[in-house]
Length: 146
Image (cartoon, rainbow, N blue to C red; front, side, top):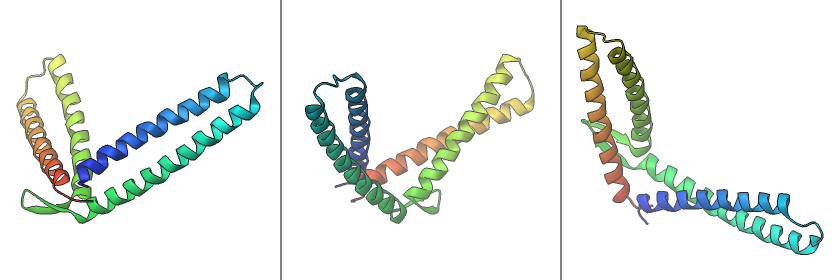
């Protein structure tokens, strides 16, 4: 199984866990208390299913993290693990958001200054770096086996 497939399966399991948890909660809240035995057996079976989903989810999460830590990609002449690159990507996205907010404020206030154009250039550079990093991470995920 490739890393991208494992991530997709992990995300599906997470959604399934959420749906099953909501179902159990709804059954507990809205059920007729008169049929206690059938209700208890239904909840018990769903809890067993939930435990199995959590077990599989945990196994996939560990396998994904292990592979992300081991797999090396090259980004701008620097070798990084996918895990390191993902952390750097998150930070870059945060920086892009902050720069965009500053840029939006500058536009609203009709701020005209040379620093404004430097900010625009920096914003464009970080967007380009983000796209590049995302494509390298995605490529590695499609061709790395778990």
